[in-house]
Amino acid sequence: MRCIKSSLIVIFFLALSLPDCCLATNLPEQSSSAQRDSLIQRGDSLFRSGTFKEAKKYYENILKLNAFDTLALKKLGRIAFLMEDWGMLKEYCGKIVDYDKSHIWANYYLGIAYRETGKYKASLLRKRDWDKSQNFFNKVLERDSLYADVLYQNALLLRYRERYPQALFLAHRQIELKPELTVPQVKIFRLYRYFVTHRDEREIQNWTAQHPGIHSTGRQSRASHSRCELDPEVQRI
Image (cartoon, rainbow, N blue to C red; front, top):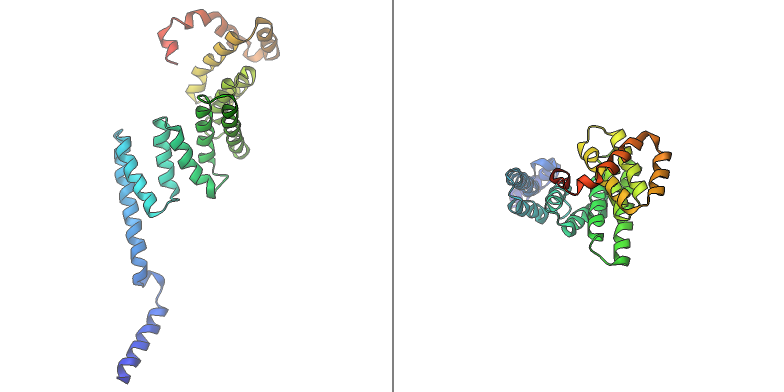
């Protein structure tokens, strides 16, 4: 009996001296990691095929393993963005900023989400959402003003708020800093259309006089304004 007890004590202390990777208690973590990787692979495959709803199920299962898995939250956020589900986009990105308030990706998409939900709300609630949107864009700009197309996205918010000159300024700044982005270069004409439609000629002339470098762009937009309403190619912009 003493021999048995002595053997058990020796085994116990040997186990304590083993590295964590050799202990059986570490096996469930390895299993969870493998399960997570498998779920991501399956979700990514479905996402690439355009089966977003099915892909979403796999990413959501990852959150059952870890409710704050950043990669899974980002992938779910990407699906919500593509499906224009702004409420879900807020939820996923909100979980990220709950523990990392400076997360640039999450702040960027929260800016977009609150901008879009504000469009459908009454005056006071709209202002609240749009103020939040601006705050999120500001956080992105404070960290990296060249991040993605954040200047153009901010310009759209200003257009919603009918601050057309400021919107045009940011859009032109975006094109200047990142000329490889095609969307701002194409859609800036829509910003001009809003400007020339909602502002009087004197204000337009004053603004173009103060910005001679882009005067030709504004003049081209005004000259083509009547054609835009009938041109199906422009309507799709």
